Image (tube, rainbow, N blue to C red; front, side, top):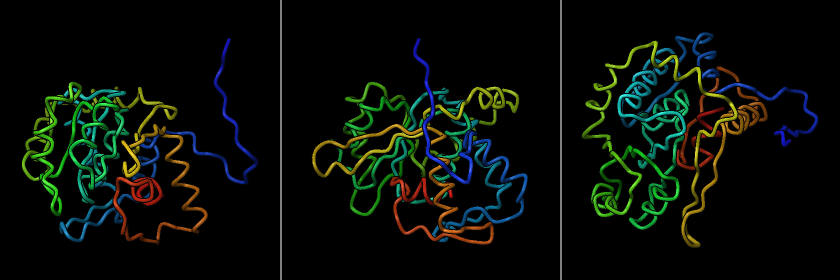
Length: 243
């Protein structure tokens, strides 16, 4: 009989044994009115309570679009507050966020979508000289797992509106089924030496990575981080967003 086990070295601090959603809920209860996220270029600011409520709306929207535990949701966009909302919303319902590099070309994004079997992609329409909408239109027929594309500056509000049909009880049942051992994120390389290479990470992986980086840097609730790197990279969406 095979049994899974954890192996870790001696540590003065215990590993966090909880989901990302439960960890966020604890922080919200402790610091509801403290500012959680600021996106200067979007004129966006949210307290932890407001941020949590917004992730609830996104989580319900995902469920309304038939995204369930274990389904893959791709995010293809430069840094924006919606990126972070989607990161935490997918974690809360047990979906797996697939990071798509903002610099990908059509063949690279097609490869990542197909290999990860991404079901829904949330995307910007364009960034710098990259026309994301044109590229996704080009490759969509070759991506059988891809059922829907939500464009941030075209479909986002309608996407959220559909989620209003999902009840709090339904969401709570989905959240309750999520375990900290579950996969929560697939991160891909840039693909500069061939096709992108992906790795699957769990709630346990990502939450503890961010937590211990924060401990190492002596962060407290009074500190702020400026994020100069893309969210798609582990520096952005793990070390910064999780810390």
